[in-house]
Length: 298
Image 1 (cartoon, rainbow, N blue to C red):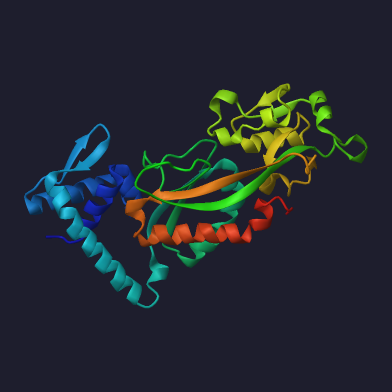
Image 2 (image 1 turned 60 degrees about the vertical axis):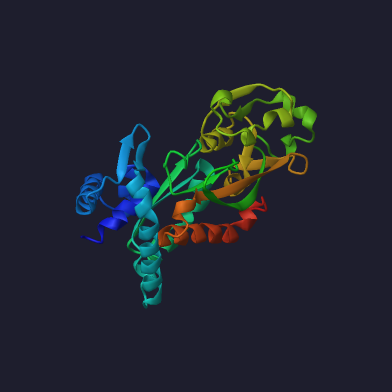
């Protein structure tokens, strides 16, 4: 019996999909399939059933799982006791995160992690939509929506501030907006209503009640470019907009929003060393970015 095959069994039991398990293991999906078939042959038992949702454990597979998890725990304890072994963490961790936070905050702080763990691979999904753990799209997700239920490990990552911005070229001291009533004179840039991925991003009704939106985009970074070019005014995250010299904050004492990022991972990845390392690093990133997140400038 090849004991290494149990690693593949464990990852597929957690991921439910060959491609996801392969990515986590850093191999091709055909390797995972071959290893599972070899394990089933050596045990003379079918361990998985494949259906429309992916791979799920048979009764024999469910009976085997606790013993393999015990093997994994023992292996992790042995590795942790060896000198310099933590730096040799390997495999891939996929991070799903909102577009703005992923590009502006996370991306600039990942190099330190890969320098410390040169055998670790990271996939950063910085998207203008929600990344779904339930669909195995990522190992760790940073989201605006707090999961209400499910086998997840979850923590409040950080609050962040959003404010109203306009082009600095358009809004100098002489043309500054001084009250909310003046906002009706201007066009706005905002999200595409029916494609906004979170209700937490619907701001305009709270700002003006109604107003003319000149351009809509699913991308907050595209909105920032539009606002900076003078296409309109709009709500942007301060961690992205404050460092942009082309932008100026409008009515910052009156118009400011606070939203929350949550960090989530599947319960069955809690003990996976490479995932825990990335999880802890993402929490550290918040500490070094607190002033930007709070809207206190660059």
